Length: 535
Image (tube, rainbow, N blue to C red; front, top):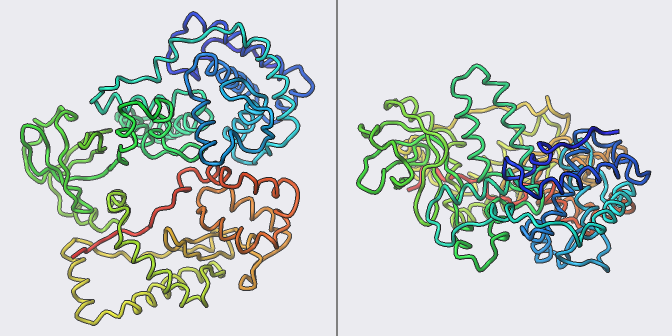
């Protein structure tokens, strides 16, 4: 028998710390759900896949879904609406002939159990069609159905998902996104647990560091703008917009919040309203509003180096995260300007960009010409780097630049402070064979450990006995792009037994939803091209 669920367990999934008058009712209901899981023969199988603490969390999680519908907090309904807009139906996987929006449904509970199990652990993907999931859902649905007419609304809970229509303060808007991602039941097994893991790692690595809370704050602040949910691969601000509704005056403001730019800047001066800063790696200049920065008085020397984050809200750049400064150091400047990683944090400001689209188009043509008219090459791992360098040399030759033009390019790079660094990667330490794929939306991509997902004539490393494992690894691992998966489906599906029958065949009916679930942030591919030495 699982241990009893207490009020602190229930509040773990809430955006407030002190219980309200109705929380006792939902705590009791959570314990009733737990009893169903612990004693009913059909639901008992859940205990084979979750430990006692996770069973308690699942019980609170499912009860929170019920509370959400009763209270009209619009969390679950937001997911249903967005899924319907994307796919023309309320949910993936299940028969929806008898489905009632804005009411409890056994299909909802089946989906939520599947989502919870596959979010709190990533070692294996448990099929949404498993009978232990659907049968447990039926029993829990019966319990909720008995309470539907009597359950109290949680009016206090609703207030946490509202914002003043005239709100101008970035930090208030940021707090709402934070609350949705990290303090809302629907995302508890996802973004909330991911944040908890990050915080635990920070404590482990920096337990004796006086600035540990600064690292935690910076990690959370960055995740607000970086994280995509497993559900539909969306960012927190998009969920906020859906919860608030399309008629809310801040609808577009939330959609327009920028990515966070975190890195080193040079202080360039200030006036009554703004602090002028320059992103060192890219040279891009920004005006940071003084409304967001109370320490402008400590900035007295031009070209002081500052580490900080900025986010654009309602047309202004606001300070976001942590801040520290140091004196000008030419070595730091050189290191930053030569860092492609540091330069790439501002790439989103250049999208969409016809120049980048044209570069990608030329690179695709060059790759196909270099690789026998194919977008994919299968190689021993120790040959991958050689293949990539050979392709890049071939691409550079296709540009037909004269010696004079080459010298100009090199001079522009030098003037820009960019010094290319020679790197070497030994992919054979990870896998014996791999692939090089030109992603039409992103650029060159290297894949290891999935060659048996591609039964193609050009692939001498395909092994039928490894095929199913490689296909699932390709599908589920976030490092492989959506485009590589789609290439596999388009060119190999008919020759892969995984998709011919059983659960793999059923996955195809909701394939895009699953890709969003598995790929999360990497579902939305952007070009891996950083402009340097621009004329």
